[in-house]
Amino acid sequence: MDERTREYLKGRFGDFYRSADATPPPAASDREWGHIPWTAGAGTTMVRHQSLLDLGDLGDFLARESPRHVYFSAARYAEPSASTMDDKGWREADLVFDLDADHLPSIDPERTSYGGMLVACKGALRRLLDVLEDDFAFEELEVVFSGGRGYHVHVRDEGVRGLDSEARREIVDYVRAIDLDFDGLVATEQTGTTTRRVLRAEGGWGRRTHRALVDLVEELRAMDEADALDRLRELDGIGEGRATTILGAFRRDPEAIRAGNVEAGGPGLRMLVESVARETVERETAPIDEPVTTDTKRLIRLPGSLHGGTGLRVTRIDREALDDFDPLVDAVPERFTGGEIAIRAAEETTVDLCGERTKIEAGENTVRECVGVFLMARGDAEKARE
Image 1: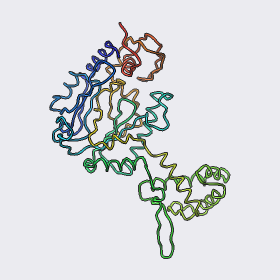
Image 2 (image 1 turned 90 degrees about the vertical axis):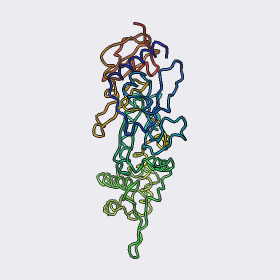
Image 3 (image 1 turned 135 degrees about the vertical axis):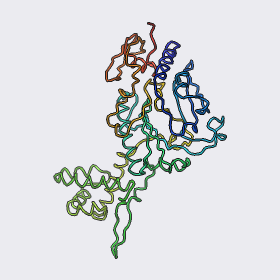
Image 4 (image 1 turned 90 degrees about the horizontal axis):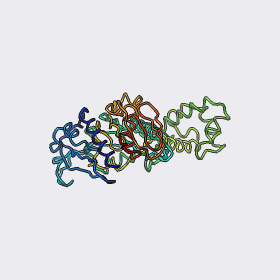
């Protein structure tokens, strides 16, 4: 980034912060604060080990320093400004989840547009929230668009704030279904002299698998026999013979399946359960960034600040408003939408932002400022002379 571009962005970030209303997190004075300034050169410098007392009024600090990135710690400390982690006196920490489109198995960053990555990441966010709310019953959740390629979820339920790194890793393993014991999803029940195997449908991945199995039963019962057999043979380990046996069991005694009885269809149904469980895991897990969640001292972006790599606002999202949230519109600072600027682009590209599609030619272009800031922050353009 050349000096003209850097100074322009720093100035406009400062203009944004002078009119922005930055809202600090709970217990803000107990947290460590850090920021990255607009330093020259390719590298970046993190300024950290500061407390809110060191910064002074947060709004004044942001307007004065116009930082490129702003962070606060998930942890709460006795001495947040101490220069070493050991001296800070760790007390507790929010449980933080990070979803980045780059980590989604279905996304190739070289082939997928920025908007397409965000759409896919929002789907992963919905899956994550479903697990956190349904399986863990967490209540104090804050959902945040990171301003970059994904989303953060801050869990502040009192019962999780004291967890150490190892306990948080267990939560990660559950959310991602790492080393899930598929055999353990089935329990053995003894009723008199009768023994049967049933899905553990009372909660967790057993309940999720059971729901998927019941849905499959309804799907198959609505099909003709040939289509139903084809659908069953799509599943791992289910050949023609087993498919016929399973379909017969589904049609003969659907209530047994709804009750989780995996004996009803014989060995073929038990194999089907594992196949359905694997499909369920693939469909309902969320590829969270493990080190973020297990790190009890992590720095995370401040909602309301600007992301220095895009110029977009790190945005809190009301849970009820998630479906309607469009980061390419709702996270664009209004301060950058009123005028036009001249930029010089390295190559031809297309930008979807502010509800419009803008085609950028290689060389000099006059574009809406929000588009120019986005391209310059990403390193895809420089500020042209005007």
